[in-house]
Image 1 (cartoon, one colour):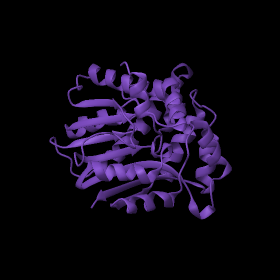
Image 2 (cartoon, helix red, strand yellow):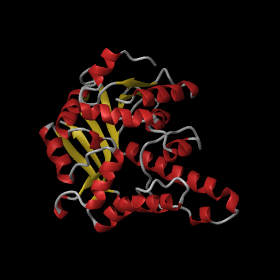
Image 3 (tube, one colour):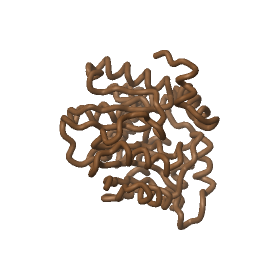
Image 4 (cartoon, helix red, strand yellow):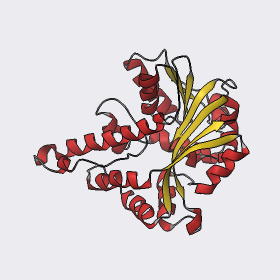
Amino acid sequence: MTVTPDASARVVRTAYQRAVADYWNNEQDPVNLRLGDVDGLYHHHYGIGDWDPSVLDGPEETRDERVIEEMHRLESAQADVLLDHLGAIEPGHRLLDSGCGRGGTSIMAHQRFRCRVDGVSISEAQVAFANDQARKRGVAAKVGYHFRNMLNTGLASHSFQGIWNNESTMYVDLFPLFAEYSRLLVHGGRYVCITGCYNDVTGGRSKAVSRIDEHYTCNIHSRGAYFKALAANGLVPINVVDLTAATIPYWELRAKSSLATGIEESFLTAYREGSFHYLLIAADRI
């Protein structure tokens, strides 16, 4: 995919957005790529659920392969939980994967609902990769990815039954983000996000949360900020699920793997001390 400088400037509008786009355009982290190689579903999020202790047993020469497959199972399980909360989606509906990464959740959504799925990202490299995966799977007519800014997608108003963010809201201001989703969703449409957020009760970002921000070039929001921004834009929560305890096993396994990046202890510390929560929020547009 070739994008002209003028087109890129229209999508990536600030110095911070350019830094985020550059980060993801250049990202080649094995913890994303090797897990995706398991079955061609490339995610950019974490996992939930207990892992099978037997992956650490057996022949040493295949241990790493078993651990990677188990980590990928957990991250796909997380995407399934998100999709479970989209409500009654039919083949004639349209869904938006906002901040789509390399597109794994979009493919899963199409496999489940058989409907049109679009993804948007400010990373040209991720969009090209995701579209290539859709072509390889023979679903490009129904699953497409676009170099667009989630804050101003340029997509038609009231054209989506469902929209989700899977660990991407920490890169943007929530108020304009949810205003855009309120514009895009049909009346009664559903928005779902899974996100890490810092705990307002403990008072600001802990040291561990600040290290996560720095590692991923992001700006983690408080828990309360999500509900204020949703309410301001006519998005009413219908389900809020605390997934914090469910994600800790993933991080424990990842810390034992060859793909550990060094940020695992910050996540585990933040979750265990209560300064950081992993939430699923589902909200309806009124």
